[in-house]
Image 1 (cartoon, rainbow, N blue to C red):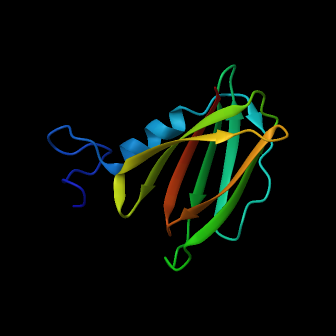
Image 2: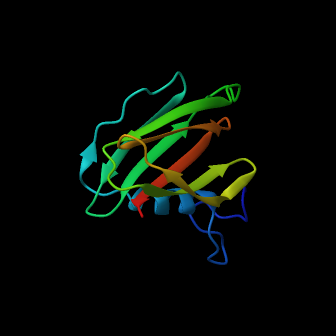
Length: 130
């Protein structure tokens, strides 16, 4: 039995499994869906927004585990001069999640960057204006 035993989302002794982390990330997504464009061959996702935060949830799923992808990301409709993006990444190297936080300059109401997504990985981005 993988990740500490047990057949559910917790181990026998009540510890978390990677699926528990993924479900926690999904629970952050608000009800207000917004347009997400440009999905790739193996990368799919959805985006939501609440009063203060934009959330983007991306998944690079490949049943054959062959496709690492570099995903171009542009987030539009931002106000202010700077934005902070908190990324939570789940992949085979970080099954319980790795968090990265970075500030970006907002230029013409948008920010753009590329994100490497390992095969069979999940990325949650939380975008807030500063």
